Length: 428
Ligand code: HOZ
Image 1 (cartoon, rainbow, N blue to C red):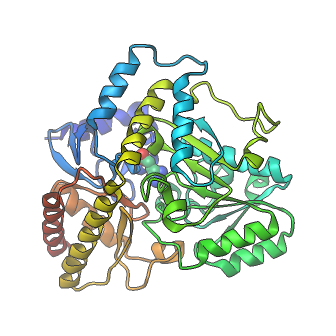
Image 2 (cartoon, rainbow, N blue to C red):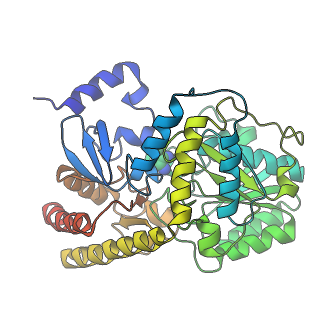
């Protein structure tokens, strides 16, 4: 008999393209039926068939303190009775802007939007308007949302489905996006030299999370910073995944590097649809209505998204120990996974930074898109399904990072290891 998830997936495909509202959820790269979720609490997800899962996605990052976090739920419930949207300014938007500015280095002004895609798209437009230049450099396997300029050699779903060229993105747009391998500073220098005074921005995931988790090589981000300063290029950190996750001040704080503009997504709304971009006043003042770089949105600064994010970020600001706890849990998981995979005896690489981690079935270090793509991703599929069947919910793609949440207990981590060992025996 079909499970309820199977029934729902069949029904979904009749009204929703591919049965999902975001391609990675379709499970196409790992095969099988996507699991339809009904509820979540703390570190656990519960599906429509009543199965429980230990969650390693955390809604792709934002559930840092776990799902349905009580203070966030209460704050939303209190706020929602006063309307879900005004289309007019609220005091809460100022509280939120002031809070983010107090937590994040190097941000004088910040503009709220409704998603990480919007944030990155707007930051690039601003960089172009500010520098009066057209081209940008992005890195292979980095994903900055689905706006046209970013769908060139992108990570996440674009890499998962091996889409080389995205129909609908014009040549004119793609030609202005130059790409370099992640961690390859010589390739960046070459692009900059070949396109002297034409590069508006370099945009980077400071710790990559859309081709698995990939760490910046020592000196890579520092060299990008130096090139941008020298060549008057706007340096953009895409902190949609790393912001408020690696540290209260995100990757800028954790790695001690200052970007000119920084973008945020779902994390600043505790999972509500929200994003933001901010940076130095000198650049930000070119945004309308201060300047002519136009950018807008009826739902920007939406009160429900703001109160959810404000409540979560306040907790993170007031409890810096959370980051230490999260990292300790992730290192514990990494070490135990390492033991289980070593006893298994086949090649593997684990990449981990802060509370981001991923396993690559690879005999070579995974440092960029090419090395992530040449791992044994067939093995990942088997591992994913073996784990899923045992109640461990990993990202359904080898090209996505896992995200830990602080509601996870050491007992959850031990259970995950025990099930990893069983899964590896099954798939060997
Ligand atoms: N781009 C997201 C992960 N990097 C996928 C989000 C989703 O499918 O919900």
